[in-house]
Length: 126
Length: 225
Image (tube, rainbow over all chains, first blue to last red; front, side):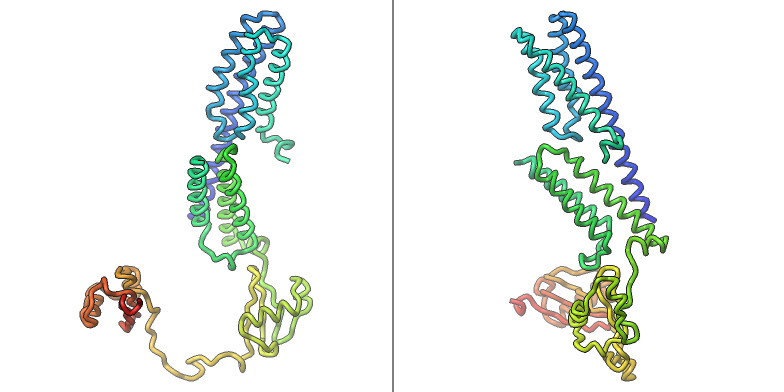
């Protein structure tokens, strides 16, 4: 009986860890996606000043929000997005506008993929 | 490099704890399900140990789940006989009253050569001596010899043998084993008396074994060297 209780305790703890990590990840990615959406909007309106401000905010927020990600996500997945995120304000500052839009789109897609891949959907499980 | 070292220590502690929680069966006595879990755990532990870019949790979570499932399953196997049969399998009689059950042998894909090998491993070289042979769920084969071939016991010979209990280690390399004393119903005063009788101190003793009947065997350190 003692071992069954230990087993149930382990399973409950594991379930709690899984739920917490999922919650942290989805919430943080949602916030980051909100900023990229705002950046896209500003870019479409040709408001490059706001876009630059948002891109700096995005880099700062990315560092804050992905602080816990290495605990449960592959480090290479995170660093790929980070590399793109860091380049966004530089592209704007150097007037490299034609590269900014695809890089922003790439960043957005990678964030969305990151959120989708960790969801326990039948497709991801199988 | 230091990260790998720290990760290795963490995984090592986790795996040892997992194996302790699961119980301490010898590798050869593992049930099929237990063997699979042991192999899986070793494999899961190796990956995050080597790969720095992989979160440690990716290794820890599956190990914890395997341990929990193994504990649950073993608990269920104890309580529900159906699970015992389903997961552990059943023992199979392959020699029944001196006759080889070919159908049972084929069922477990065991050849006559395998059977003879298992017999020889038990120091049985003549098939005619065997009355029953049973293949256990862990893959080992147990044999019961025909009455005329079984080794004679004290009961057969109508001999009375004193029950001295199990001989235990009382002193090992100068250190007293409290557990050994308890099992044999002895105390430190008895140990001191033995040391006086043998004209030595506790530090001179390499090994002292004794049983419930206070029969002892003492090996000194210099004797050992």
